[in-house]
Length: 207
Image 1 (tube, one colour):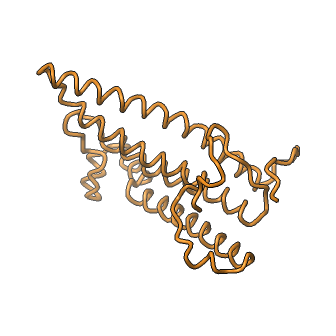
Image 2: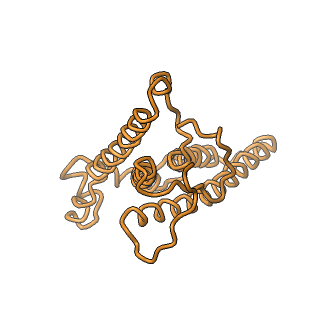
């Protein structure tokens, strides 16, 4: 049986730093999910009341959509650490215990590879270096690279779209950290720790 307590050590090794970073990140994601759920509920209720009162607020629909988008990505990141992501086990359940562990390590490693690839993609897409060279002038960057990310605004809120799109790089970084934490646990380099603030049974996780 795997020990579910972290060792009490003064020296912060690299694996322990990753585990603690993942735990802190998961705690922040829990608060963000709660806040976004409350916000989404309030937006929907206000939208229903104002529509029935024949005084609809035109920007609420767009606000609710972006709220769901952020909920989706933050929730997907948290689900990665909680091991609630879906897994097809028709093959692995027929393997021996040793080969099953190897398959899990490979699967978790691919999650980390995907997260790193997504980080690289976001850097190329958002081009922070090019933006800095353009003096943080979105129009100048668009004229040089045809990247109009920093010149576009949302339809009703009139917010800069790049602010809302920040959910992608945040998701990429958080999923990578959670994937590394899961990988360290799967490789048995650190003991597996139960998540704090989430009431999960042994049957809740499917991965």
